[in-house]
Amino acid sequence: MRVLHLFRPTLPSSRAQAVQVVHTCHALAVRGHDVWLFANPRKDEQNIEAVLAGFGLQPLPSFHVEVAPLAWNPAASLWFRWRVGRWCDAATRDSVVYARELRYLGLVGERPRVVYEAHCHERQRALEEGAEVGVTEAWERAMLARAGALVTNSGGTLAALRAAYGEALPASQHVCHNATSPDRIVALAPDTRPLLVYAGSPRAYKGVRGLIDAVAELPGVQLELVGEAPDSPLPENVIATGPLPYAEVPARLARAHALILPLEDNSFGRQFTSPLKLWDYLATGLPIVAADLPTVREIAGDRPFYYQPGDLPSMRAAIQSALAAPARPAHLRTWAQRAEELEAVLAGVIARPRCPS
Image 1 (cartoon, rainbow, N blue to C red):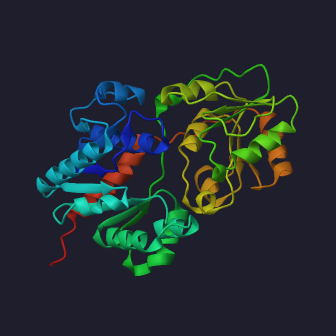
Image 2 (image 1 turned 120 degrees about the horizontal axis):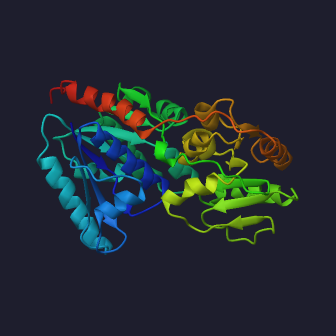
Image 3 (image 1 turned 30 degrees about the vertical axis):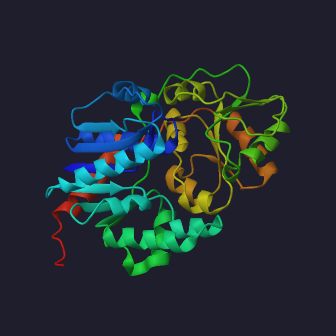
């Protein structure tokens, strides 16, 4: 197959979106498909081999990563539109656009087949954020009408879209979770202190402030935030590493006695998330503390020590139980497995006869 992943990440990057997109593309290319990804550069000169190495990946002749020649956004945007247009003009019978971004649908035209990967119900998210809903809903309806198949990151995302659009959804509907890489599994080397580790951003809707408040009342327990620190001051037993390269995160996890996934009971936590960090956590075999939400149980089942979202005593009890627990068998889902699932979806869309216009 000839696949264009329509997303436009900025590279290099350690953001979860970029990690997921690059690994998905690379895994499809490993399976023998020609895959294109057009990206923004973080700086004007870009070394693709170095970018891929930052993700722990090797270049492949069938994985065509191209970045805009300039980081200046107006020029980069024009370049992106031009490259997408040229790719679509050259579309063949086995070409498919794998779209993760609603606003780029207008660049695709009518020639290539389209598969839409949704990570939330965009209209619902816009409504909750107080944003303009009409345009977002129009884009979402247009994408769903154009797509030959729908892929979602979680069962909650699929359920929300079914409730909103019903029979307007493509008949081909699939939940395809995220994954991690086998080479991110490193030998455990626990710290001498009881160490709890969180890897990710400190955004308020992810529940990190509550985590910090809970750990502040656990003397003797150290919390390490792998990534940016929140704006507010941290207690003495909480430290933040600052942003780390993607490749360095597994070694930080390996120092922990337990790992934590805090989430709030909001639409993101309850419906729309499939956290990359959770797949990394599961692959370590370390005890996991997690908010008791459907999105987490969908992935991790009964493995974590659960707490009730927003309940700090419940969180503290789960943390103490996890810190006292032994390691468990690792659970590994790979990008190769995800690519195999997507391959079947993409092939099904290509094989399906087009409806007469």
